[in-house]
Length: 144
Length: 120
Image 1 (cartoon, each protein chain N blue to C red):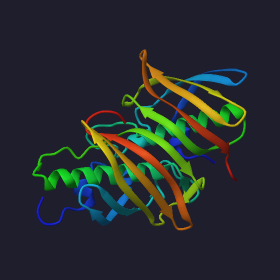
Image 2 (tube, chains in turn orange, blue):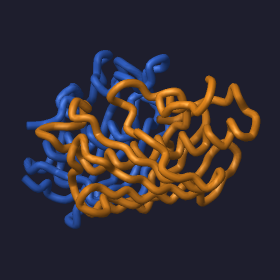
Image 3 (cartoon, rainbow over the protein chains, first blue to last red):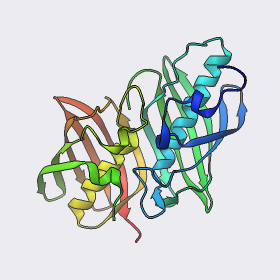
Image 4 (spheres, chains in turn yellow, purple):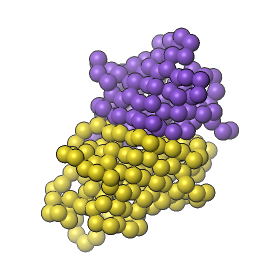
């Protein structure tokens, strides 16, 4: 990797599974804001929309980015990019669907870390306002 | 009209008694959710567990269902291509659904969610 790494280099997700498109803002290793979108050819999409729960995947990818960038800066140049989503709690959806190919914004804040599990507070907004907020747990090395 | 992700699950052996239901699920090796997730290590995304749950809950209620809230879900084991699973659930009158996804004698995911009728 030379220069500023691209999102494709930072995330293990390929093709239409990669939802994050850019990092908008990052506060060290504890907070990140990313933008993303649901591709119209996502397997979860139909007729120009996708279930709002895809916001959870966007947030999980933002969490993976935050963790990987922090490990890179800490000298872990061979650090794993993969962060598995292992838990969701306190999730509330304010709409049922999000439009495909529209910009979504995810803001993620670290709530705590223990061993290889990290917990985050996430909020996702779409073109019509808030889509969901939830607490996510990710693991560096096992789970879904 | 449903998404490719929803349609690709093979749901069989449906059983239903009152407010509880169960079914067997085959996750086909070519399920579209494996594409890109991940290119070198194919794993069913956690959100695909939710898609499967909604698909089965829709079948159980006869009305399209959407996710209103997640009280708590644990993704305990990764689901690989070709995995056979058993999905069981109970739902109360308020739309609170408790589910468990098992396979090979082990729990793959479980949790409590709130459902509502899907908007057209």
